[in-house]
Length: 260
Picture 1 (cartoon, rainbow, N blue to C red):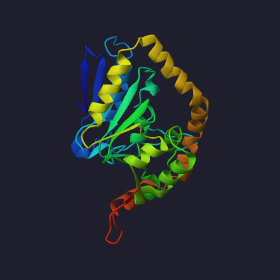
Picture 2 (picture 1 turned 90 degrees about the vertical axis):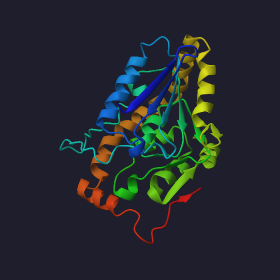
Picture 3 (picture 1 turned 135 degrees about the horizontal axis):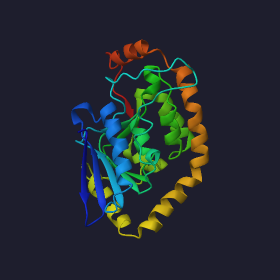
Picture 4 (picture 1 turned 30 degrees about the vertical axis):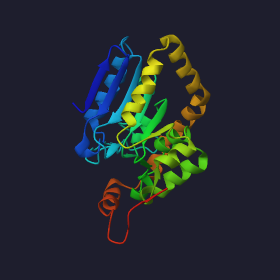
């Protein structure tokens, strides 16, 4: 199992942990399936009224799709098979509040999860970045998800700068991506405190509020997501060229990514 799920019946909060620390909690096809199944199951669990989502270890919350995953694609510029599209709670019709707790890196496909959380708590050492352009890929779904949480210029900069730059926790807090910054190692505890408060309120009112908040941007988000398959199919380099760019990362002289 690539997920750990701890349910606290007294508080009504479930702690969901991506448990692949050796892979920086990257998501393979098994993990993607487990996430979709879990969100679906939590819809029916009356003992769970709020969820905290985090990653095992301190190096990364999640680094997106596992590079070892092969996903065959249809020969059409209008269709893309993306195994991450169903990994988020909203994609599985779960409207119980989800709080994300980020330690370390959150990048690329991690934004599918962060984009469907109600809010994000991050350690002071957390960093956020989108590597797609550096490896010859279009950031489409990820950029749209972040556009619901950050100002346009901040999303554009993060999406376009690729691996050259990372958004630190303080900057993420300043632009609205993160709602609370904690000391290192403290993100989960802070997220659990917030989730416990929320879980203590009447469920109908909480879930109705979640739906109301999401409805404010859902039309624009849905329309933007509809453009993603064609943009990805037309703009992505072939997989072998992507692999060459990925293998060439970190060459001498490149220097570490700048954190702002």
